[in-house]
Length: 177
Image (cartoon, rainbow, N blue to C red; front, side, top):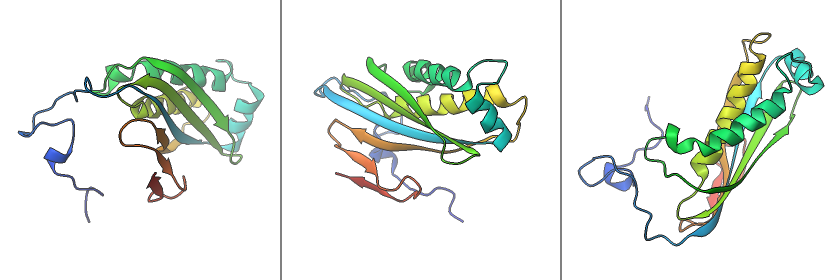
């Protein structure tokens, strides 16, 4: 069984130099462009937990609003969490929620900037921390909550162009425009 799905030579990764040493990518020569990244995550729980979230009946407060605030705050802390990630002047962050079923909560983070590097990591961090906050606020009644399908849905701007996952339910479904 192959341990990793993708095999990439070290010299193909931008965070390593030719000798394999770690480095922060130099973006000083890149032209600033408008950039957007969208990431999503699902939180799976018992139906009773979902009902309490929707009814806002947790003693700790409104689960979705606390999780939204945590995700927004986390996006701004991404360079403190991910090694070699550039500090970015984020111009906007939104976290949207959807209820695909009585046991699934979907959170979608959209992060925007105008800069020399993208905001994919900020969007993924925002989605992750949003989901973790839902877990933290609900764990007293549902320790079996799972966090699933963290993924980049879309990225716009920059030299690599536009990426959009064709089918968010298909791990292989993606395209580059």
